[in-house]
Amino acid sequence: MTSPQNASAGSRFPKGARAFPHRDLIGISSLERHEILYLLAEAEQYVAFNRQAAKHSEQLAGLTIINAFFENSTRTLLSFEIAGKRLGADVVNMYAAQSSVKKGETLIDTAVTLNAMRADAIVIRHGSSGAVGLIANHVDCPVLNAGDGQHEHPTQALLDALALRHKLRERGNEAEDFTGLTVTICGDILHSRVARSNVLCLQALGASVRLCAPPALMPVGVERMGAQPFHDFEAALEGADVVMMLRLQNERMDGQYIPSPREYRHLYGLTPERLALAREDAIVMHPGPMNRGVEIDSAVADMATRAIITSQVEMGVAIRMACLDVLTRKARGVVGWGEGEWV
Ligand code: CP
Image 1: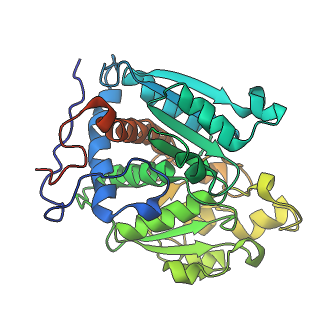
Image 2 (image 1 turned 45 degrees about the vertical axis):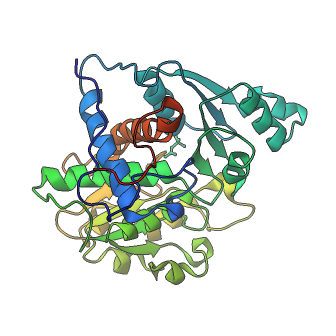
Image 3 (image 1 turned 60 degrees about the vertical axis):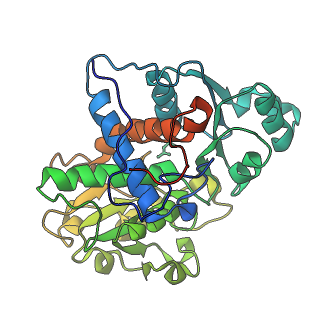
């Protein structure tokens, strides 16, 4: 069995730049382009590691990681748990529904309680935008945002970038970034932390991003983020290299935003006919969970040569291993953490 090694940062870092001088991972908005590329580079070793039959290392042995999830999750929770365990850490999951949060404990008291247990990293998903950043201010260890309200889902954007890069490489495109690519993101943009993190990440890596949603599900001011807004899905698809579909986040809707799922599919569902408007070989992505027959048809979601939805899930484990590894380097005394230049 091959154990993962710390990847060399290589020559792409600006002179004097630090590889990853952050204690926490709260959002893509606080990352520089070279820091995003660094996390992607670090994740590559874990992609290979995870494809081995035996996949266990002792890299984080002795560390305790707490996954505190105040919202439901399948992919993010399980992949963080698998990531920590494959690296040899002790991983504990806290589900808010079974915790003292239900007895009225405040978010900050919960954070202070987790901190007192001497966690070495805390992974948090919460329904309120900004909650993860708030918790980070009350604990002594690295905090990783596993999705906070409508704000950010940084590891999702990183895993999406890694999956996209793998697909492009499979097609012979060895570029490190996405310069020249047009990515159309369609769905409930208003409530989507995935859209926000992806706009930031894709643009940092050189892609042009189009955002498409019904008027009621498009936030104001997306142009200020540098994205091109569309309400006409067919226009948004024209010539796109990548189509990323998002589900309707009914759990965040406090009223009627669309006439019906059937009407929504009629205008915004990705069907094989609509996909034909994008580039001939356009790549199809979805962060999951999917609502088949609403925002995406099975005939598209299951396209073996173009849909990379299961690859996104695979890359999620590798990205989360890389993030846990990088953010716990200070605790582990790994030489080079945030100190001067990496060579
Ligand atoms: N994409 C994503 O965050 O999925 P989960 O809600 O299942 O974690």
